[in-house]
Length: 96
Image 1 (cartoon, one colour):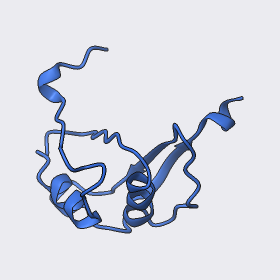
Image 2 (tube, rainbow, N blue to C red):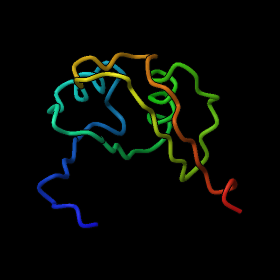
Image 3 (tube, one colour):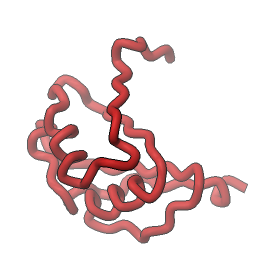
Image 4 (cartoon, rainbow, N blue to C red):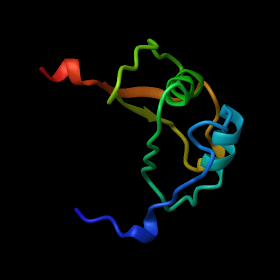
């Protein structure tokens, strides 16, 4: 599956400068025809983001982790902190 580069958006400041509210503002600006949104980043921001955006997260996020949150909303504007359901959490040790 090829992803057109026009669909890839790089956001400066995401890794070190964003707060959860900054991230939420970014998410809420996503057009509603987008069904799935991928966000790539580094710790400690991604760890804090998973904690602050999900109802329940165990806090274990080793290198190369993948966390998938599901928000039961019909518009990105309705995404709120602590409302995501943990759908998937993978990390390399689980795949051995």
